[in-house]
Length: 334
Image (cartoon, rainbow, N blue to C red):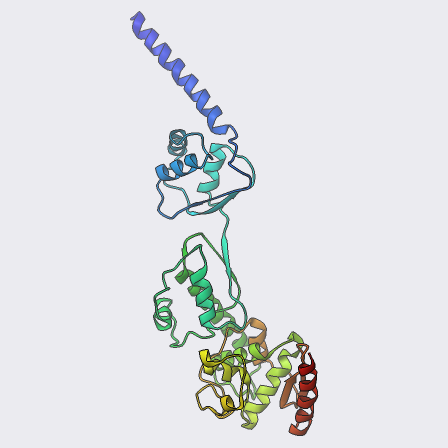
């Protein structure tokens, strides 16, 4: 009887001592290898693997106590994948809260106004923190994968900065960018005054917006550039816009647009073919979409770059030719 009491006493004492030590241990500050310290937890990582990873990195003094703490707290299966950044030394219990609450550092990628879909894909494929599920797919395969109805990907993805968890699929990012473009375009189409606009549907507005995006050197000229193109479409004039020629030439374009290029017949040659090209030629931003649907009221039919980002507008060919000669001399001097 006496021996049993001693065993119970020592066991109880041992439990109390261990509990006290464990409480102190998990609440004690651990010195990080360096501050700030960044680390990643991959999707599907087990508790044991995460504890071993953090121990090997010197973030934890041992793996077993962290595993035990996670089980006691009921967080053994609650670890969230992501990229984390610790800005100060922390304790095991605070670290556990950190990686179960998903308090992680998000990665980001930026799509720029005026980019082609080819440039967008290149940026996606080169991003080191993205899972590249579309790298070997065709543009058409990607459109099917994200549920798009269109058959050509150009211009369908909204240029913006997108934030995502580390190792997210590029499919998720593309689907988000596509959905935002659809929403923005639909909203602008619904609210625009379309009286007498020579645009039959939102997709045509997107095509025009992409041309405006490529032609605009200064934001203050955007609405007037739209007005010029709208005036031309209304009157049946050719758009005669260089960016569509350049887009149609693709890899053949060497940086110099020649007269022979303007005479080469293809579906993006707006010097030969009337109306809009068949698809957008770039990613238009919201400002260009708004401009396409809300053009400035102007009698201008022509514009030429001044060489400082601005454009000079003319209502007749004679004035335009004089402006071209004037600003070409300035550009040549520059």
